[in-house]
Image 1 (cartoon, rainbow, N blue to C red):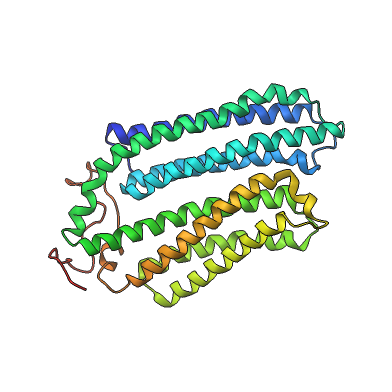
Image 2: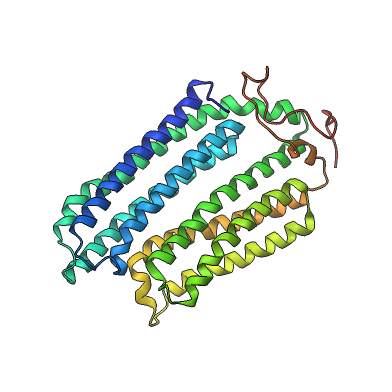
Length: 338
């Protein structure tokens, strides 16, 4: 089991934990006040489902972030550490959007006498504090990430040696694996909001959206596996599925702003759904490009480096490593020309 061994690895974990505790405490308070004042029988109203959904997403998002923090430090993966800072920016954007969305939900419920408007005045300071806490957490994480970059910098050089091209291939692989981990949250986050707030349980679209969750998870796991195995045919199929996912999210984004009888169903969460859809679309486009580069790097000597990758702590091994001794024999340390 990995245990942080330096002041900066401990600092990164502590910042993430403190941020998660504060934000979840504020969100839980808002949820409690909202539920206490909500009229009986109003819980099935689309606007009444917004706050429980936001709280659920923050719980999942922050717990998932803690898992990724531990994973990044265990692997001494600088790319994932930097990605976590950007992930925090995504949470910051979502927290800012959440504030206006909840205000609109309270106003809509008040117009139907389902909740007292004073709830907004009571919860607004906490909703304002959430993005402020995340913004501070982002700054602190960025500072610590810069220190971790220096701390982890030597790792890859000890195993890819002086081969610059091999280091670039390994860097591309790291970026791709990190992207898959972040894709998972934004894919699932969009789906949760769509299912809970927008789609009626009697709708066929509900079943299709639910079915997309395990399919998405399977695709992301398969993508990582095929990349490690350097399976070109499988990667071509995965890239095709990425394009299908891109078309799906573009369709959802356009549909939310079309003038149609169903347009009103999207209003309770349209801004937050738009935020998630746009971030997801950007991530998919980046993932497609990096996947293509990874595929072009197959059969060029990288596979032995990643076939049995396992990070050991300094206590377990005398030197800091990101990859163990190679199962397929030693890799030449001299420069190679492709």
